[in-house]
Length: 208
Image (cartoon, rainbow, N blue to C red):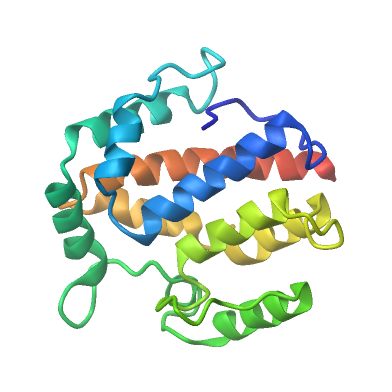
């Protein structure tokens, strides 16, 4: 896991890029479902200090590690259900279509599926969530960084996908979670997510 500062994005075989991919994978896991005992145990042994002291992500990373260590499996599951599941309409939607278009399964999802088809990618039918779920998008970013097909996994694809599918709404999601009175663990996760995406946006801006 990385907590480094904004850097100029490098080639897919660099250590920085592999760390980026790992962080996207972690975020995909955390937003898809509440942490299980294995993930909480991993964070119990994770360093609280950022590899680069004073980096932009150091504070949010420490908060996330602390939140992981303070949470139990049951507490995290209860919070996830209260915020993102609910009976009928959830308190907070984790889907891009809702935040961009105001409703699920709208034009943003159609556009996303078109982008995925262009990349030669499809959703795993065993996965219940639609493709605009934030965890799916983070996993797609991980693939675009660490995938073996350089025609797909390259900086141009990363920048374009990030700008089209995450940048328009991810901060709105994080703000909604931070403002919710029931959010504890997920407020820390949202703060780290927002900080990490800010670093990503700066890196993509440097590409020109």
